[in-house]
Image (cartoon, rainbow, N blue to C red; front, side, top):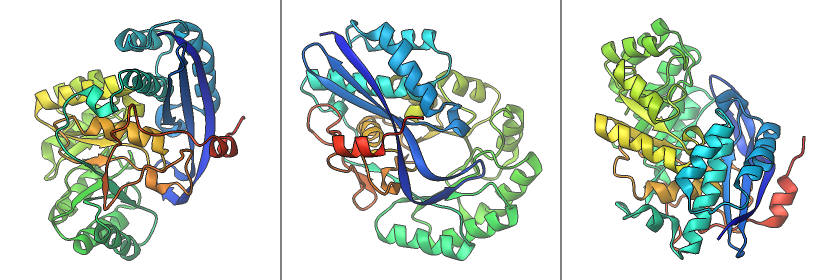
Amino acid sequence: MKIECIEAIPIEVPLVRPLKMAVATVDARTCIVVRVTTDDGIVGIGESVVARYFTGESLASASDIIGGAFADALIGRDPTDLVAIRRLMRRIAVHNNGARAAVEMALHDVVARAADLPLHAFYGDRVRDSVPTIWHVSGGTPESMAEEAAIAVEAGFPLVKVKVGGDVDHDIATTLAVRQAIGHDIELLPDANQGWDLPTADRYLRAVVDAQPGFVEQPLPCWDLMGMARLVATSPVTVGGDEGVFDANELRTALAVGAVGAVVTKLMKAAGPIGVREVFAVADAAGIGVHFAGMAGQTSISAAHAAHLALVVPNLRYGSGISPHYLVEDVTTERFLPVAGHLYPSDEPGVGIEIDEEALTRFRVDR
């Protein structure tokens, strides 16, 4: 079996409502869809959100690197040689994590389909029957965000993420209001998206102790490793890294200086499933909890890929943030959506998701 064709399809799909973060407000998701075809007709698919504010990539850069340099290097290779291909893509392109992730996902889909295995079975023995996922609240008043969170919990979501990182008084009031609305059996994960300086973050962390957040995500800029270490050393609640920790090597560094008490991993950050598993291995060895996130508004393709992997990793201390349920529509024949706040990956071969060609064409953008 050899790789015969690699396609990169750039798309943009509207969100059901804007997502307001400290670094950006997003009303549509730009994603790169990858389709890999082998010489014996097996087709695998992958996808990654493309966000300049997160990985520095654009639809144009992702399309170019996948359809150009990656395709030139990978066509004719054995798709089962996953580790060697990962290393090759890393040599070809520094960073470009989202583009690399989409290709690596598609290759995993090819290999699992060829083996007639659901992707989770290809990864190993499952340790859970479903994947708990999250509801995001952002951009409202403390009262409106608390009300929305309560509705999500009533619908079965076991985790609520609150976007903070702006006006600290508003964020404190929102966090406390959301906790009061959802009760103390629901995991509450405030996400600051690098929005504060050290004194402001310290003030927030001390003010929300009674809300008992699982951890507070990336309160300081990604480059401020020593500031994060100071917070971890003095904070009364756990502090986690996201934008500051992309892969296993960066996690090792953060742990060495005491800059994280929890970590967020994502397929698009770690450049694919292999990288995510490396992050889990380091976190497991260090004894810290992991939140396996996605991006609000990812398509069902990457959501299903992440959920398959989430069935088999042991350390899902803070659940998942796999979030295809914020798109108005999707590019798959059947949407992969949570049921009562949990995701149930298919037992069909591969990722168990198929592309809707009409929708893919409709949402395709070339710019």
